[in-house]
Length: 132
Image (cartoon, rainbow, N blue to C red; front, side, top):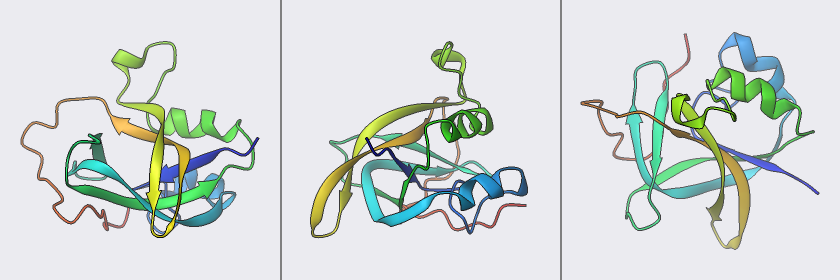
């Protein structure tokens, strides 16, 4: 069964840091999509807080995963520990991704798992910084 990943920040090819760039290149681009919620600028990377009842959209890209093993590398990069999700920086979960004029698709996505504090909201829902 095919698995998908929705990315809205540094897991996209054009924003991926060197440490994960090779793995990101293995992903097969499927198309664009969005989820409802808020996107925050946390400096070097964004943080998404999902809320299907919120009007704001978080825009990103949908990729087909070559295998489920690649998720372990992304989990490490996103500081997600499936055995300790409450202590993780991001939490990986499956959500339905909205697509223009197409059926929704279920994909893995990383949600920020900390208080955003006074981090600025990215009002247009698109993170565009280039990773250092």
